[in-house]
Each structure stands twice: as structure tokens, then as C-alpha cells.
Amino acid sequence: MTALALMGLLPENASTTGSVNLDGENLLQKSEAEMCRVRGNKMAMIFQEPMTSLNPVHTVGRQIMEPLRLHKGLSKSSAMQEAIRLLDRVGIPNPAERVSNYPHQLSGGQRQRVMIALALSCSPDVLIADEPTTALDVTIQDQILELIQTLVQEEGMSLVLISHDLGVIAENTDNVIVMYGGTVVESGKTDHIFDQLTHPYTQGLFAAMPKVGMGRGKRLTTIPGTVPDLINLPSGCTFTDRCPLASDICAGNIPPVNQMEGSHLVTCHHLQQAVSARSKGLYE
Ligand code: SF4
Image (cartoon, rainbow, N blue to C red):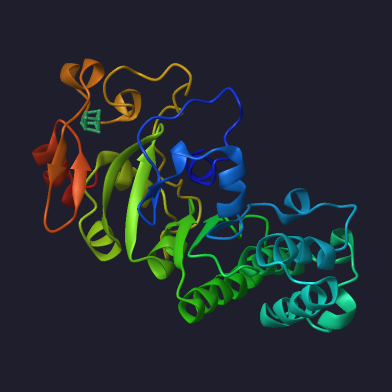
């Protein structure tokens, strides 16, 4: 939802507060026509499942050509040449032939590469990748993440990577924002967050990761309870119902944002208890 809000793609009945600033402009104040010039041009998104994000009735070439013609004003033949170059750039074999394929004629990994080519077509300043490898097996996942990293560095783009996979986050980001129930619970440099797991939810996420050598038959650690109803969130801390450190103050009062070392921020009423709990294991 946050990524869709950044792109101005929320459902019509959604409401937003705050601001989305890009190049000194608040995107929330732009009209739909103005946002059409931003989307795909300055800011692009790689969606989770390319099979449902790509249009099944158009060739992949036509879909890559569309933003090139719309935003860059390329002629049909130049756009086709550029689409072939982009397919080659993202590692699609025989791009001159593949450009005429429909999405169903490609494998899952190839479809995701097409999505990346589409997102890159107008050299955006910001690339949002929303769980870009969820639908892929582990080997292809590595290849796609490596491709995204290479392209981001070579093209000088900023990357916003959304993932539940902590390994993916550790290897591919400089800064992390941990969100729970639609709110930011912890943020800071990736090294700091991974080194100093502080917020009870962040500790729970790490505790839930399978550990090498944990032994056959041993159950994985879980965070008790379930995610709250997002329409009807608790009035205080959104993690109250599941947090081992929760007390009365948590249920009715929005927790304070605590400044840790550097840019590291933790939103919690019981910061000291959370800090002391991390060495003992809050969920063991
Ligand atoms: S504010 Fe309370 S419920 Fe929320 S994370 Fe901190 S201790 Fe847990």
C-alpha cells in the first residue's frame, strides 16, 4: 500500500496524509495527468507477480515500447530497437525473437526480467521493487536480485526494495524501514538494524528465521497471535496484542520514537526492556 501510495496508484476510495517528495515536488498534490508523466518516467515499479502485471494480450515488445513512445517520443522502429536492447540488457536470450513473444510464452524468471526491462525503459530516478522474487525459485531469485543491483548501480538509480526475506534485505539495502500494521516501528542503517535488533517485532522476525543446525523435528520460533485487522487497528501500539513486553500503556497510547545511535530510530514505550531482552531472546 505504501508503494502504491508513492506511485499514486491507490484505489479511488483510499485517502492519504503527509507528503511524497521527489525532486522537491510533493507528488500527492499532482493531478492524475501529471502523475502519468512521473510514473514510468521518473519513478517505476517492478511488481510481485509478472504474470498478472504484464498484459497477456500484448507482446512483451509492445509493452516495453509503450512508455518509450509515450515518455520519450521515440518512433515505432526506434522504440522496437530500444525494446530489443533492453531485453538483451536484462539477459533475455535471442531478444530480437523474444520481443514478439506474449507473456505466457516466457518462463517466470524471463517474465520478471521483462518487468525489469519495462521498469528501466525510461531510466527512472527511483525504482520500486515490490517483493520482486516472491514467485521465483531460489536460484532464479539470486539472478534477478543480482541483475537489479547491477542495473541500479550502473544507471545510478535509487532502489526501494520491499521484502519479507531478511536475507534479501541484508544483502541488497543500505537502509531499512521495518513496518508493522501500517506503521514504521524501526528504521536505520541496515548494518545497525541487523546488529542491534531492538524493536520487539524486529526481534520476532529474526527469531522466526530458520537456523542452520537447529536439529530435526525442532519447531521454528513464531510470533504469537495474528496480524491485526488493518481497518480496525489498536489505538496505541499496533503490535500490542502480540508483544511479549506489552503493558497497559501500550494499548492506549501511541509509542514514542526513540533516537538510538546515528539514524537508528525505534518506536516503543519500553525501549530499555526491549534492549535488555535482545540478548536473552524475547521469543525463546
Ligand atoms: S510499545 Fe509496547 S506493545 Fe509496542 S512494541 Fe513496545 S513494548 Fe511492545
